[in-house]
Image 1 (cartoon, rainbow, N blue to C red):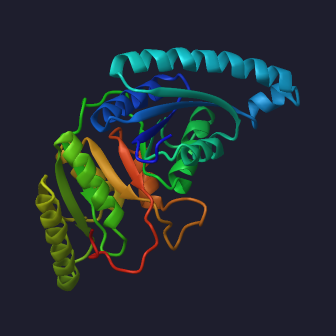
Image 2 (tube, helix red, strand yellow):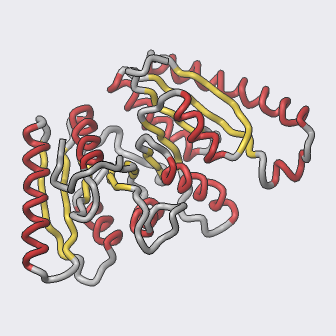
Length: 293
């Protein structure tokens, strides 16, 4: 696969949710003249493992059936969008295999469905896999929980935190806004009445807004008071009020959270909105929030 190809990986479980994710991926592939890879993974832990034990023949038979089904879907998608669509069936731990394949094909983006918070068994498998992929993927990941989405992207919600690196997130917002002809709505949440902090947040907002406008897209900026709400709730409320079609977040670990999963605010945003969420993992660099591209 050419390294310059805009390669999109779409994990497929043949659920309604994964089909919605595929629809969004198709639109992005058309806009980028890209290439889609469909991936289905036979889970080698959990119920299937207990049913099959060490019977490799049963796994092989299931993989053949799954590959045939994927090939058929790939032909259908390719016929719709006129672009190359690959299909791959594999076995292993779902999240690990998604990460492995994304690196193998040099994916520029992963688009996957998730059923939401892992609060019950049927949701735990999907939710936990999405969380692990978001946490460990080196490329951006769009997670899609809701089943009905606007066909395109009118408004990209871009939350900024002065304490976190924003370079990659702003660059991704600019790229997508150009493709979709979207408006980028930049927002910072103020949780206290510290005038100095508010001044810094405002300065940062204005700089990012100017960068986006100079990049040829429409951008608005707003400082919002949390008023007793959590950071995640404030962002989700802002997105709802401003008709957000995509929320962009960073996925670095918070200092009071485990190193193995993303911070609690990021999780809360992903789990509590039907709006697609793009998670961008920051590149560790020497610099500050103001070092925009």
